[in-house]
Length: 224
Image (cartoon, rainbow, N blue to C red; front, side):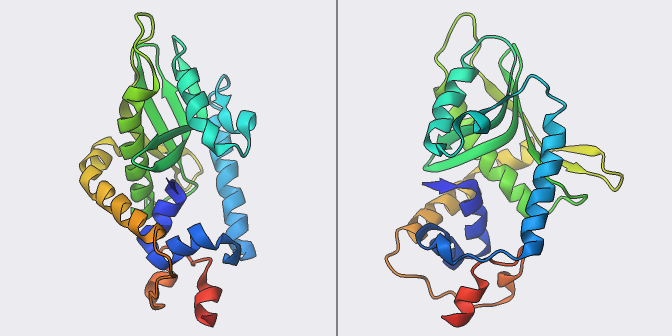
């Protein structure tokens, strides 16, 4: 099964995607990259604190990723307002975890993807696009119809980033993400083919090794 992070990896390099699936032990993350990850998690946590009654699925299930969609469906089946952190959804062989999902009492759903950056990059938009594709298609089937609980419907998907002062800035990417459905589906189909390859792809090293991120398999490819 693909994940959101593997989808993004595949957009940068199919060889890196294959390695991520077959040989993740070969990845090397510099200290600066790990520090950036921690900073991003701190920024995400500060936004989650604006939802004091949110339910953190990751704290309940920890590493049992396969159970995230099941618990998400159970919690979304509850009547009334629900806020979930790391809500899990599967569609078309892709698993995504939403940073913040807010279901209102009327069933309308808003999702927030949180990024600690003053700039909205193409990679961030791709991130939102694959999540929107999966969640919008998965939502109708995760909850049983109930007279007292309207079926949830994804109405808004915001990329939440920061301005130079550190404030939260939401950008509505709902229409953009929906317009990307066909392209997203094509990428997913291609990445499934890459994942099924028996041998490591022979993608030559180039500028893509550093763009948009320094590839964690850079050392491996240099030595190959």
